[in-house]
Image 1 (tube, rainbow, N blue to C red):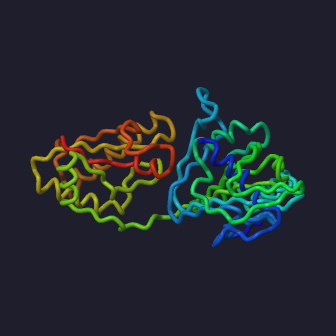
Image 2: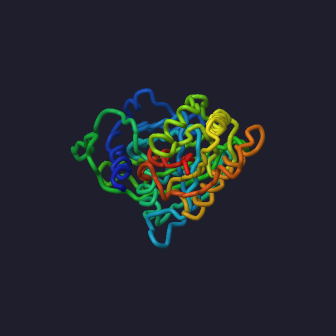
Image 3: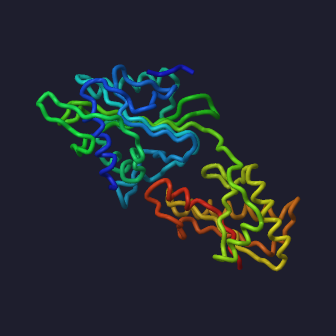
Length: 340
């Protein structure tokens, strides 16, 4: 299994639907394969998959839920890199606990470092995961339907009953190259199909391909002229950090050139975040990132007059899109140049 080296409805349906698709081992999702770190439980069917070569993904940092809303995690961690999401169906007759213990044992033998686990009374944890993080969104699904021993047949669009489950979150790999693993397993076989679903998410640290966006002073000026502000798409930070990454240099060059050619221009440098995590932490992070941009522009080699640039942090107060999905959250995490 392991190589050594509705918010609620979508995932409820996904885990249950996948269980309804695997009466006998069938063809996996077209082009899909196990992740090299974690192999499937013997005889299982890979019913759903989504792989992003570079993206961000959010996982719970602890099993604690918010007091004001028991279906929201208290603390979340946003990670970036290669994100693999897989959903397996175990062979008929296999108990959910047998599947769970096999994954758990194999992970432990490979050096898995557990962040937290929940094996009993995890329904609130499940609903928080489903509502906040929509884990099966964008999945590619295998084809087919199944006929149960009672003669019932379930199609790909069928919505079945919700099964409680177990959750395990931790890391696997060498320090500095650790992959974050989230494992979710049905608490029992699905009441209608008698089949057990296992969800596996693996986030591997990986540098993003850069140089894919061109930035120039004319483009910045056009944005300011049209809307009074422009999003600085060429600024890069590690998740949760305020230090500018080296690949931000072309964007800083363009900003410095704009300010040089327009000596009367004064601007706000405004940091924004999504709504993951506490508002206070996001406010602090958004301001720190804006301050980092100002610090870079006022230092050598640019030496822009510090009086022309004012940093501000707005956290999630001015979103460009909804925060319900990762696409929207990605748009909201940004730094803007705003004319004073």
